Every structure is written in C-alpha cells, then in structure tokens.
Length: 57
Image 1 (tube, rainbow, N blue to C red):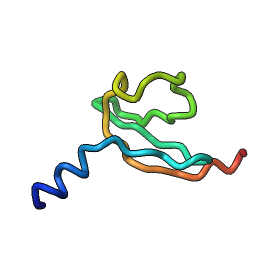
Image 2 (tube, rainbow, N blue to C red; image 1 turned 90 degrees about the vertical axis):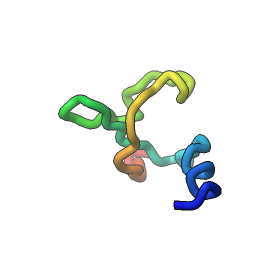
Image 3 (tube, rainbow, N blue to C red; image 1 turned 180 degrees about the vertical axis):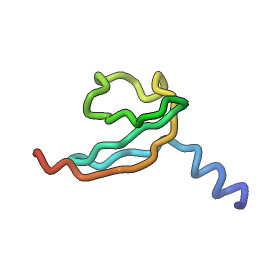
Image 4 (cartoon, rainbow, N blue to C red; image 1 turned 30 degrees about the vertical axis):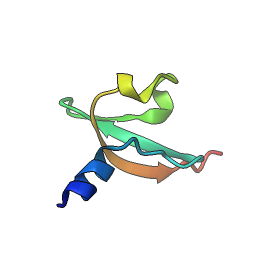
C-alpha cells in the first residue's frame, strides 16, 4: 500500500444515506450503527466490518 493509499484509508468515510454500518471491536458481536445514538464518529472506536442498505426506509 502506498503512502497516498494509506492516507486516503485514514480519512473519515461517509456511509451513504439509506445505508448503515456494522461496527466490530473486541466484543464477540458486531454493533449496528442504527442503534448507536447520533454522536460524533470520533467517539466510536472499532472496525467497520460491513455496510448494508437499510431496507426499512
């Protein structure tokens, strides 16, 4: 991975409207972003393991 690719990977990523993300950390389960209260993304730690379309919209 080049320096440019590494820098781009660190930039905040935007989840498109109508989609949600699954966040995984050291817990044995993933957290669904639809159930995390609207807080600044900097306050959430973990790895996004999947982005899915919200079919309930």
